[in-house]
Amino acid sequence: MGRIVTRLRKLFNRLGPGFITGAADDDPSGVATYSIAGAQYGYKLNWLSLFLIPLMISIQEMCGRIGMCSGMGLAGVIKKYYSRNLLVFSIILLMVANTINIAADLGVMAASLEMIAGVNFFFWLAVITAISIILEIIVPYRIYSVYLRFMGLSLLVYAVTAIAVKQNWLEVAKYTFIPHIDFTLPYFMTLVGFIGTTISPYLFFWQASEEVEQEITEGEIRDFRAKPHIGKKDIVRMRGDTDLGMVFSNFITMCIVLTTAATLHVNGITDISSPHQAALALKPIAGNFAFLLFTLGIIGIGLQSVPVFAGGIAYAFSEAFGFREGLGKTFGKAKAFYVIIGIATVIGALINITGVNPIRALYYAAVINGVISVPLIFIIIKMADDKRVVGSYITPKWHRVFGWITFIFVGLASVALILGLAGVGG
Image (tube, rainbow, N blue to C red; front, side, top):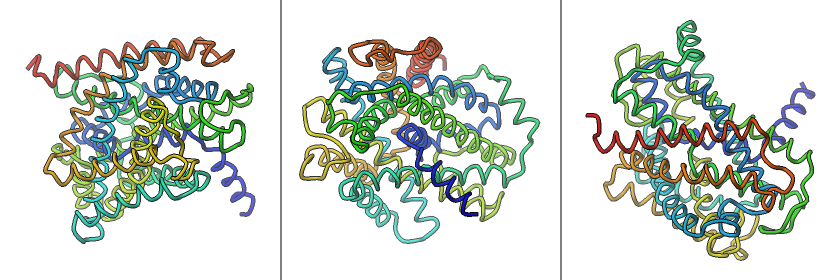
């Protein structure tokens, strides 16, 4: 037993920025998108969980390598070597999209806590907003990174839920390995939303900056913008961590689709607009156990993802305007960085009070993410091949191929989403 615990501890300690980034991709608003996909179309969109793995790995590996080799986050590299106009454009849109996602995640968590623990929605909204801000500002980064990893592992409840409900495993295999497309606008819009939720700009900025944070924590560099000395072993470690994180992310996505497909879809419940609605619908069909697990997963990953969204904004702004940055610094040494985190989180909470529906606003956030993603993916591919940025660790050929496939695929998906929301084609 002691050996098993030791091995599990070693495995946990190996989890890094790649794993945290992958887990954050399954935030409550992502759970909503995947729940809608499973409720409306059963297993038919499950093939995306497999198809998107190499695309995610290629782009996130590039982001991780850019941060690791340059000692800067994406915003810092773009500012130093590339277009300032693109930087300003990206940061403004990133701020808007991330704040909407913060609002949606805080709202979903508050509604979920209200379901299982009672007490008023606004009480829980205030509590989780305060917890999110306090943890990022007060807790030392070494401890905070453990918290982020642990909250990421809370997503495993969706694997338990998917197994706990009755599945048609023959159908699961069929729709996982054989892509299925319905040539209807609603199906295509759901497919595009699925892609946009899975490959998002906030993941690009977050992982690059967190690789630098890890280098600072391990004593390899003293601060952001210091040039690190990278060895092949470091790159291999980062790639392994990123591969694990993206595979884990898509595995959990698949589990969410399987759960809602096997319960809600087969019972004709297709009108789901949020994850806590999905949890409520699960209760009479799959029982209290499935309901509780699904809800706890929403709360657990929400407590991990809100800091990622807010932190992503703070990293980008700090690098663009030359503020001192880093979760490894105390508040006194990076005041602007932490103030940005606090403001973004509070604005997200206030959106839930103003009457704006944050879940509906996610559609517009998806459009914004699509608009940012396309030029960002293009420049990420270029940066990861630029020896000024990554030194001798330029992109391996197969990563470059999948990177350009991602660029084309996300570009087409973004155009389709914009046209669909504009009412083109019905």
